[in-house]
Structures are given as C-alpha cells and as structure tokens.
Image (tube, rainbow, N blue to C red):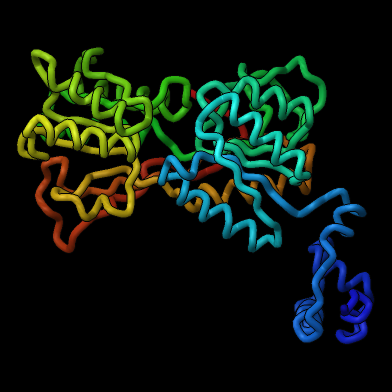
Length: 376
C-alpha cells in the first residue's frame, strides 16, 4: 500500500508539502499542488483518516440533524450540505430528529459520540434539552433554517464550542436561515392589491422561529395594506398536511370565510388544497392561494402556484461554510446569516398567466450576513 512518503517522492516534494495539500493546512503553489494530486492518483494513495484523527483530534466529519425524511424542503437543504461537505473534503453523518425535542437530543448525542467535528441542526420547537447538551459538551454547532432565541441558551453553563457571546442579545451559536417575515408580508400585500380584504394564514407549528416570523409578516402585510387583523383568520396547521387540511376547513366554516389564503410551508399547501377540493372550491376562481415554499411540482399544479422560493440548497451550503469557519477559528464572534427569498409569480393568486410561464419577481430581502442573532 503506497504511503505519504511514496507520494512525496513521486511528486518531488517533501512529506510536509503532501500533508499540506491533502489536509489544506497551508497554501501550496498551484503547480506543486497539482503534482501532488497527480501522484496520489497515479499511486492510488488513500489517506489514513483514523491515524490522522488521532494526531489532530479532528475526524473531518460533520453531523447533520434535520427532518429530511418527513419534510421535502429539508431534502433539498441536505443536497446543499452534502455537496459543500464533499467539496471541503469532509464526510457527512446524517440523523433524522423527526422534529421531536427528546429524540433530537439523542440523535445529536449519537453524532457527537461518533466524534464529528461539529454539527448542523434544524432545531425543534422546544430545543432546551438539545441546547443544554451542546453547551455542556462544547460542540461546535450551526443552527439551520430555524433560529434560536437568546433566552433559550443556558448561559449558566460554562464553556461552549461556538465562542463567547459578547452580550445578551447575541446567540451562543452561529445560525443560517432564510428571511421569513418580509416575504410573507409580500404575499399578503400582493393579495390585498388584487382586492382581497379577508386573507387567511395557515401558520406552522407554534414555537418555531419560522412560524413566529411568518405570523409577524402576515400581520405586517395586513397593516401595510390598511387591513384590520381578524384573529379568526389566523390558524395553525402545525407545519404538516393533515393539520393544514383541518385548519383550512375551520376557516371555510366561518360565517365570513377568507377570499384568499396564505399557507406557510409546502406540506401545509398540500393539506389546504385537499380541504379546498373537498369543499368543492376552485383556485383561484373561488379562493386565491399563495404559499411559502416553492417546490418541484408547484409549477405543475393547475393553477400554477404563486409562491415564495427559499434558497434551500444555498442554505445548506452556507451552513457548512459557517461551521468550517467556526472550526478554523473557534473564538470568532457568533453570527446569524439570513439569505434572501424570491417571489415566484404564477396564477393561483388570481393573476393572469405571465408570458413565457412562471415569473420570478426577484429577491425579497437583503443577503447581507448579520452579526447579531434575531429570532421571532
């Protein structure tokens, strides 16, 4: 079996240079780096990852805990994470916490026990147990998609792998998410601009930051359109299809049902459509519909769904980059990175078909990373 010394001799460089090329520990001239990589390919050299981890205390592996099986949105995020991890020369271990607070702590503990260098987690609505474990064991962590309120972190616990938080308004952990409030407000103001005065929202699971922010955006959108808030039009679908079907049915049973509807994620869109079909209602002739989360088949519905598209793959890739930055510089200040969404204008809102099919009306928020954590 070829050794690192064999690679060095073949490439005409030192063993240290080979190590720097393979581990990315120091810049190497492009032609030298290519000579090393050519020698690795020619000899069939395979780095001894186990031996390297014993020396460096790093396994070059990352743990990912997202409910990818139960939520197609996270499946796309997973693709972004996987591509970025492989590009960086790391391996990926995946666990599905099923959005269950107790189970998420267990699966993150299992990832940690397998000596991953850090974890990326989409936290549940009640992450106190998870955060306590991460703090006690100083696990470098990036929260993905859903951000954590500063008061969730147990600040009485000493230490922490994510660096010291400088003040009470800054999160203990790095976080990567998409903007939720302003895009939701845009859906509401768009529907109001089409003449709708009773606009319902099927919101997500209480306790999630995405739910809180989209509810806030709904309220802001009504205010911007000069419409009064009717609390009866704000219902919870618990972020899943069955709950949204029941919530939509409750809206339709009101003495004055909504004439337009906003659904706060892709699974709830499916549930709402089932309820509308069951009640014999046509979209958009009887009721207009806009949804948060674009998905692969949204363009195939009739009518085609007007939606907010989140940059799901880029969210995953950005989370990996933020975690790698944390591993390289453990004491750097924490940061919350918010990425912009796009308004995809189709026909379920009641607008006529745009020439050439679906129309992306551009981003709805700035992509400038924020150094200060905010969670609704």
